[in-house]
Picture (cartoon, rainbow over the protein chains, first blue to last red):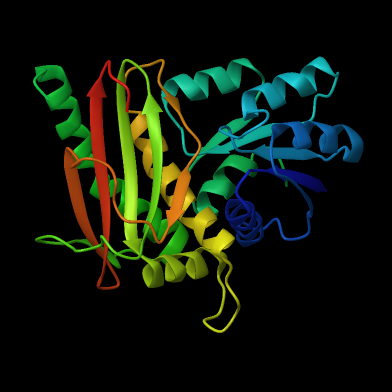
Length: 120
Length: 160
Protein backbone atom coordinates (compact mmCIF):
# COMPACT_ATOMS: atom_id res chain seq x y z
CA UNK A 1 0.00 0.00 0.00
CA UNK A 2 1.13 3.50 -0.78
CA UNK A 3 -0.47 6.65 0.67
CA UNK A 4 0.07 10.25 -0.37
CA UNK A 5 -0.16 12.83 2.42
CA UNK A 6 -0.77 16.39 1.21
CA UNK A 7 -0.58 19.31 3.62
CA UNK A 8 1.21 22.66 3.43
CA UNK A 9 2.35 22.16 7.03
CA UNK A 10 5.38 19.88 7.40
CA UNK A 11 4.49 19.52 11.07
CA UNK A 12 1.00 18.32 10.20
CA UNK A 13 2.32 15.88 7.58
CA UNK A 14 4.55 14.36 10.24
CA UNK A 15 1.62 14.10 12.64
CA UNK A 16 -0.59 12.45 10.00
CA UNK A 17 2.14 9.94 9.16
CA UNK A 18 2.76 9.21 12.85
CA UNK A 19 -0.96 8.77 13.49
CA UNK A 20 -1.25 6.38 10.55
CA UNK A 21 1.46 4.24 12.17
CA UNK A 22 -0.25 4.42 15.56
CA UNK A 23 -3.55 3.38 13.97
CA UNK A 24 -1.96 0.18 12.71
CA UNK A 25 -1.09 1.15 9.15
CA UNK A 26 2.64 1.02 9.77
CA UNK A 27 3.52 -0.99 6.68
CA UNK A 28 2.24 1.63 4.24
CA UNK A 29 4.73 3.48 2.08
CA UNK A 30 4.24 7.24 2.37
CA UNK A 31 4.83 9.99 -0.19
CA UNK A 32 4.28 13.66 0.63
CA UNK A 33 3.11 16.82 -1.11
CA UNK A 34 3.16 20.42 0.13
CA UNK A 35 -0.03 21.62 -1.58
CA UNK A 36 -2.81 20.46 -3.86
CA UNK A 37 -0.97 21.17 -7.11
CA UNK A 38 2.04 19.13 -6.01
CA UNK A 39 -0.36 16.51 -4.72
CA UNK A 40 -2.09 16.25 -8.10
CA UNK A 41 1.19 15.85 -9.99
CA UNK A 42 2.57 13.38 -7.46
CA UNK A 43 -0.62 11.30 -7.34
CA UNK A 44 -0.82 10.97 -11.11
CA UNK A 45 2.88 10.01 -11.22
CA UNK A 46 3.17 7.79 -8.14
CA UNK A 47 -0.31 6.24 -8.28
CA UNK A 48 -0.83 5.81 -4.53
CA UNK A 49 -3.59 3.57 -3.17
CA UNK A 50 -4.96 6.37 -0.97
CA UNK A 51 -4.70 10.16 -0.74
CA UNK A 52 -5.00 11.95 2.61
CA UNK A 53 -5.24 15.69 2.01
CA UNK A 54 -5.66 18.89 3.93
CA UNK A 55 -8.42 21.17 2.62
CA UNK A 56 -7.02 24.67 3.08
CA UNK A 57 -3.71 24.89 1.18
CA UNK A 58 -1.96 27.44 -1.02
CA UNK A 59 -1.65 27.01 -4.81
CA UNK A 60 -4.49 24.47 -4.99
CA UNK A 61 -6.85 23.60 -2.16
CA UNK A 62 -7.95 20.10 -1.29
CA UNK A 63 -11.32 20.10 -3.02
CA UNK A 64 -9.77 21.33 -6.29
CA UNK A 65 -7.08 18.67 -5.87
CA UNK A 66 -9.83 16.03 -5.65
CA UNK A 67 -11.68 17.51 -8.63
CA UNK A 68 -8.42 17.59 -10.60
CA UNK A 69 -7.83 13.92 -9.95
CA UNK A 70 -11.30 12.94 -11.06
CA UNK A 71 -11.02 15.17 -14.15
CA UNK A 72 -7.78 13.39 -14.99
CA UNK A 73 -9.51 10.03 -14.74
CA UNK A 74 -8.05 8.99 -11.39
CA UNK A 75 -10.45 7.22 -9.04
CA UNK A 76 -7.90 6.91 -6.22
CA UNK A 77 -9.59 6.72 -2.78
CA UNK A 78 -9.40 10.20 -1.26
CA UNK A 79 -9.89 11.36 2.34
CA UNK A 80 -9.66 14.82 3.86
CA UNK A 81 -7.73 15.58 7.05
CA UNK A 82 -8.74 19.13 7.87
CA UNK A 83 -9.48 21.56 10.66
CA UNK A 84 -12.85 22.28 9.05
CA UNK A 85 -15.34 19.54 9.83
CA UNK A 86 -18.67 21.33 9.49
CA UNK A 87 -21.67 19.46 8.03
CA UNK A 88 -21.41 21.64 4.91
CA UNK A 89 -17.76 20.68 4.37
CA UNK A 90 -18.54 17.01 4.92
CA UNK A 91 -21.42 17.21 2.46
CA UNK A 92 -19.27 18.90 -0.18
CA UNK A 93 -16.46 16.39 0.34
CA UNK A 94 -18.84 13.47 -0.06
CA UNK A 95 -20.55 14.96 -3.11
CA UNK A 96 -17.16 15.32 -4.82
CA UNK A 97 -16.32 11.70 -4.11
CA UNK A 98 -14.26 11.76 -0.91
CA UNK A 99 -14.42 8.59 1.18
CA UNK A 100 -14.27 10.38 4.52
CA UNK A 101 -13.32 13.59 6.28
CA UNK A 102 -11.18 13.46 9.41
CA UNK A 103 -11.47 16.67 11.40
CA UNK A 104 -8.53 18.04 13.39
CA UNK A 105 -7.86 17.47 16.19
CA UNK A 106 -7.67 13.71 15.72
CA UNK A 107 -6.01 10.74 17.32
CA UNK A 108 -5.17 7.18 16.26
CA UNK A 109 -8.71 5.98 17.03
CA UNK A 110 -10.12 8.62 14.67
CA UNK A 111 -7.86 7.36 11.89
CA UNK A 112 -8.68 3.73 12.55
CA UNK A 113 -12.44 4.43 12.53
CA UNK A 114 -12.18 6.32 9.22
CA UNK A 115 -9.78 3.99 7.39
CA UNK A 116 -10.53 0.51 8.68
CA UNK A 117 -13.85 0.12 6.81
CA UNK A 118 -11.98 0.72 3.56
CA UNK A 119 -8.50 -0.74 4.17
CA UNK A 120 -7.53 -3.88 6.04
CA UNK B 1 -19.65 45.90 18.98
CA UNK B 2 -23.14 47.32 18.97
CA UNK B 3 -24.95 44.62 17.05
CA UNK B 4 -26.78 42.10 19.21
CA UNK B 5 -26.20 39.21 16.79
CA UNK B 6 -22.48 39.91 16.72
CA UNK B 7 -22.34 40.12 20.52
CA UNK B 8 -24.08 36.77 20.80
CA UNK B 9 -21.82 35.16 18.23
CA UNK B 10 -18.71 36.51 19.96
CA UNK B 11 -19.91 35.07 23.25
CA UNK B 12 -20.64 31.72 21.62
CA UNK B 13 -17.20 31.59 20.04
CA UNK B 14 -15.55 32.72 23.28
CA UNK B 15 -17.19 29.90 25.23
CA UNK B 16 -15.90 27.41 22.69
CA UNK B 17 -12.24 28.43 22.78
CA UNK B 18 -11.28 26.49 25.90
CA UNK B 19 -12.85 23.13 24.93
CA UNK B 20 -11.47 23.40 21.37
CA UNK B 21 -7.98 24.12 22.66
CA UNK B 22 -8.17 21.37 25.27
CA UNK B 23 -9.25 18.82 22.63
CA UNK B 24 -6.37 19.92 20.41
CA UNK B 25 -3.73 19.73 23.12
CA UNK B 26 -4.91 16.44 24.60
CA UNK B 27 -5.23 14.68 21.21
CA UNK B 28 -2.26 16.00 19.26
CA UNK B 29 0.23 17.67 21.59
CA UNK B 30 0.14 15.99 25.00
CA UNK B 31 -1.47 12.64 24.22
CA UNK B 32 -3.38 12.97 27.48
CA UNK B 33 -5.94 15.41 28.89
CA UNK B 34 -5.46 17.87 31.70
CA UNK B 35 -2.25 19.69 30.80
CA UNK B 36 -4.00 22.73 29.28
CA UNK B 37 -6.17 24.55 31.78
CA UNK B 38 -8.04 27.80 32.09
CA UNK B 39 -5.96 30.57 33.64
CA UNK B 40 -7.06 33.51 35.69
CA UNK B 41 -6.08 37.16 35.48
CA UNK B 42 -3.89 38.42 32.67
CA UNK B 43 -0.55 37.46 31.16
CA UNK B 44 2.10 39.87 29.95
CA UNK B 45 3.08 38.38 26.61
CA UNK B 46 3.85 41.66 24.89
CA UNK B 47 7.60 41.21 24.54
CA UNK B 48 9.34 38.42 22.67
CA UNK B 49 6.16 36.54 21.91
CA UNK B 50 5.06 34.26 19.08
CA UNK B 51 1.76 35.22 17.46
CA UNK B 52 -0.17 32.94 15.10
CA UNK B 53 -3.47 33.99 13.57
CA UNK B 54 -6.12 32.92 11.09
CA UNK B 55 -9.11 34.87 9.83
CA UNK B 56 -12.56 33.45 9.18
CA UNK B 57 -13.97 35.65 6.45
CA UNK B 58 -17.68 35.82 5.70
CA UNK B 59 -20.89 37.58 6.70
CA UNK B 60 -19.40 37.82 10.17
CA UNK B 61 -15.61 37.86 10.12
CA UNK B 62 -13.52 36.64 13.02
CA UNK B 63 -9.81 36.65 13.74
CA UNK B 64 -8.36 34.06 16.11
CA UNK B 65 -4.83 34.65 17.38
CA UNK B 66 -2.71 32.38 19.55
CA UNK B 67 0.03 34.10 21.54
CA UNK B 68 2.65 32.62 23.81
CA UNK B 69 6.28 33.06 24.74
CA UNK B 70 9.03 31.76 22.47
CA UNK B 71 10.13 29.08 24.98
CA UNK B 72 6.56 27.77 25.23
CA UNK B 73 6.14 27.92 21.45
CA UNK B 74 9.36 25.92 21.09
CA UNK B 75 8.04 23.37 23.56
CA UNK B 76 4.74 23.05 21.68
CA UNK B 77 6.63 22.53 18.41
CA UNK B 78 8.83 19.85 20.01
CA UNK B 79 5.75 18.12 21.37
CA UNK B 80 3.96 18.18 18.02
CA UNK B 81 7.03 16.83 16.25
CA UNK B 82 7.89 14.45 19.12
CA UNK B 83 11.41 15.87 19.22
CA UNK B 84 13.82 15.46 22.12
CA UNK B 85 14.86 18.55 24.09
CA UNK B 86 18.37 18.46 22.62
CA UNK B 87 17.31 18.12 18.96
CA UNK B 88 17.77 21.29 16.91
CA UNK B 89 14.52 23.14 16.27
CA UNK B 90 14.26 25.71 13.47
CA UNK B 91 12.26 28.90 13.53
CA UNK B 92 10.39 27.50 10.53
CA UNK B 93 9.27 24.51 12.62
CA UNK B 94 8.04 26.84 15.37
CA UNK B 95 6.12 28.98 12.88
CA UNK B 96 4.64 25.87 11.29
CA UNK B 97 3.60 24.37 14.64
CA UNK B 98 2.00 27.50 16.05
CA UNK B 99 0.33 28.15 12.71
CA UNK B 100 -1.29 24.71 12.93
CA UNK B 101 -2.51 25.43 16.45
CA UNK B 102 -4.17 28.62 15.15
CA UNK B 103 -5.49 26.73 12.10
CA UNK B 104 -7.18 24.04 14.19
CA UNK B 105 -8.69 26.59 16.57
CA UNK B 106 -9.90 28.71 13.65
CA UNK B 107 -11.21 25.76 11.67
CA UNK B 108 -13.29 24.57 14.61
CA UNK B 109 -14.62 28.08 15.27
CA UNK B 110 -15.53 28.41 11.59
CA UNK B 111 -17.99 25.54 11.97
CA UNK B 112 -20.04 27.75 14.29
CA UNK B 113 -20.19 30.70 11.89
CA UNK B 114 -22.66 31.21 9.05
CA UNK B 115 -22.31 29.05 5.97
CA UNK B 116 -20.24 30.70 3.27
CA UNK B 117 -17.34 31.68 5.50
CA UNK B 118 -13.78 30.83 4.49
CA UNK B 119 -10.63 30.25 6.52
CA UNK B 120 -7.38 31.97 5.63
CA UNK B 121 -3.97 30.34 5.82
CA UNK B 122 -2.17 30.93 9.13
CA UNK B 123 0.11 33.95 9.56
CA UNK B 124 2.81 33.58 12.20
CA UNK B 125 5.13 36.23 13.62
CA UNK B 126 8.08 35.37 15.82
CA UNK B 127 9.29 37.80 18.44
CA UNK B 128 6.75 40.44 17.47
CA UNK B 129 5.02 42.84 19.84
CA UNK B 130 1.25 43.19 19.66
CA UNK B 131 0.04 45.65 17.04
CA UNK B 132 -3.69 44.91 16.83
CA UNK B 133 -6.31 46.79 18.83
CA UNK B 134 -7.66 45.22 22.01
CA UNK B 135 -9.46 41.96 21.32
CA UNK B 136 -13.15 41.31 21.89
CA UNK B 137 -12.18 38.29 23.95
CA UNK B 138 -8.91 37.11 25.52
CA UNK B 139 -8.83 33.54 26.81
CA UNK B 140 -5.90 33.02 29.16
CA UNK B 141 -4.80 29.40 29.23
CA UNK B 142 -2.01 27.67 31.09
CA UNK B 143 -0.17 24.86 29.34
CA UNK B 144 2.05 22.97 31.75
CA UNK B 145 1.83 26.10 33.89
CA UNK B 146 2.98 28.48 31.12
CA UNK B 147 0.67 31.18 29.74
CA UNK B 148 -0.90 30.98 26.29
CA UNK B 149 -3.59 33.43 25.19
CA UNK B 150 -6.19 32.91 22.46
CA UNK B 151 -7.77 36.19 21.39
CA UNK B 152 -10.82 36.78 19.21
CA UNK B 153 -11.84 39.79 17.17
CA UNK B 154 -15.29 39.72 15.56
CA UNK B 155 -16.41 42.21 12.93
CA UNK B 156 -19.81 42.37 11.30
CA UNK B 157 -19.42 43.40 7.67
CA UNK B 158 -16.11 45.15 8.27
CA UNK B 159 -12.53 44.46 7.30
CA UNK B 160 -10.45 42.68 9.88
